[in-house]
Length: 164
Image (cartoon, rainbow, N blue to C red; front, side, top):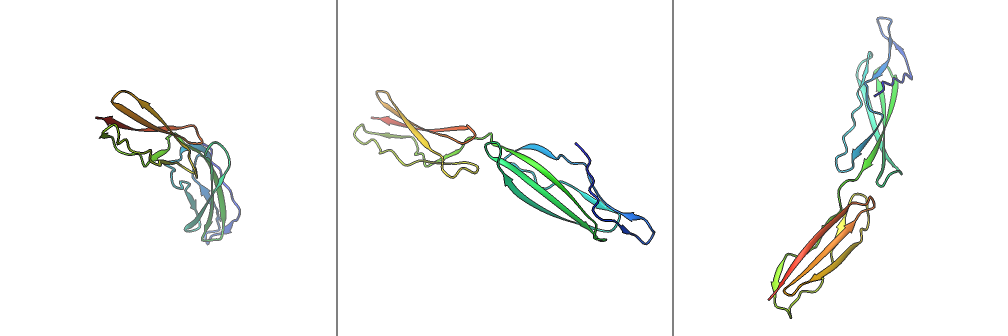
């Protein structure tokens, strides 16, 4: 952790002191779970009244999800300004969510349900391919759907069809 202080303006207080904005110690770059991104966490103080902080965020390429760049701009009552930036490397450690899989059923051998359309969604992925495989035994059919996101995380869901 580094303490970084940017002083872009100085004003004179009634007591004749120079006012400045100080920035608390903060992590400039770190990895974070993309499912649990913390809010802005840089604190600013000034010897010249209240500090107004504006925070903006933008995404940049990098890793399988990307990087979140957070920019802070602080202004105090005297018009002094200070700024800081944080670089959050977004990490995806969870598999995609598969939806539309049917419940387990028991049916007669001549009434096997047709294969349904099953989908998957994940962080930032527009389309995730879902593959299906079937395993047959004498009185059981197991359908397994599998999805893999762009970070390589996998998910599976299955349906067991018991045949009478």
